[in-house]
Length: 361
Ligand code: 6MZ
Image 1: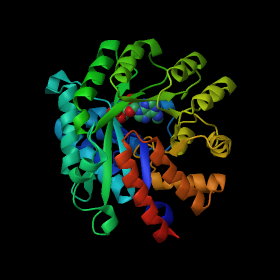
Image 2 (image 1 turned 180 degrees about the vertical axis):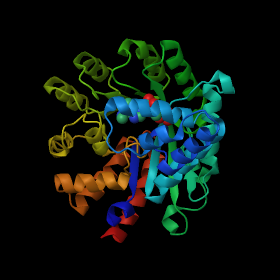
Image 3 (image 1 turned 30 degrees about the vertical axis):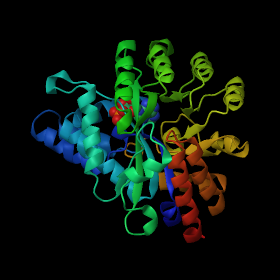
Image 4 (image 1 turned 180 degrees about the horizontal axis):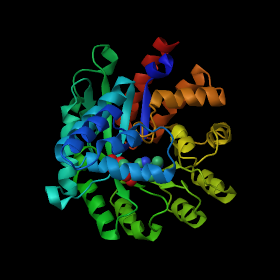
């Protein structure tokens, strides 16, 4: 495990509200319990529970969203989540979150995202770098913090943002999120994710917003095949997103299409096993995709909800599929090729991995 922690890693599928520390959730629940908004003892065991079905996971998200409603808390969790990823040597993080509107506390999708940005700026344990849209590699380097991960003094983590569309949203609401993402490109927003309870909603509802996003140059990743839904899986693959998440319920035609379009897959082992989207680790599609050299990247999904970390996901892969250190290093390094940031960032990350090769031998 120690080795997996010291390995530099790239995290491409992490939901902000799913990555919160249990201790923070409990603290927030206690405060709301004291205010009489919730009954703490009812909520405590839900937070600490380990096994959760997919249905229970989405109930838990409803609870988490009650706990994290206000701007101050959104800022806090963003800061903590970034610090947690950085502390286990994640060197590049694409953090995704659903912009939320809550009229009762004057929250708009934009003000929610501004709170996220404040959290990003509040990180103090590491240098946070991001690559604004349309900046060439040369000037990008100058815009980065002076301290470099390579100098051994302070760590650096790239943080880029993806805005999520929740499957409960209408076309208009999804469109609002895409427009917000376009407005926030200079603040490190690179793309759009479609997520939320996979048994809710219809692909055609989100399609206009996703097409609009693509026309304007945003990158797109879709939760695809988290439950059996053959028509939707085919429609999503025909859309040719830049990446898909999960791909648990794919059939032969789906694998063919995925491979034909060479679409990278964000693999979330612990999440898939805990929610029983895959019945056991030894039948997980990681093995087939890995052996076929299809582009894949190990991710956490919801490190808080599933009590995992990216280092742990590498450890799980190593023991389940017999990967050695060299294979794990290569797997982690390959992920650079599937990030949504530009070539300047990729080059910088390749250097970070090359330097780490010597230390990790
Ligand atoms: C689908 C998921 C998910 O956006 O509020 N989310 N959507 N499948 C999953 N697999 C278990 N895990 C998380 O983070 C929480 C939201 O991310 C999505 C859900 O919409 C959830 O409400 P944010 O920061």
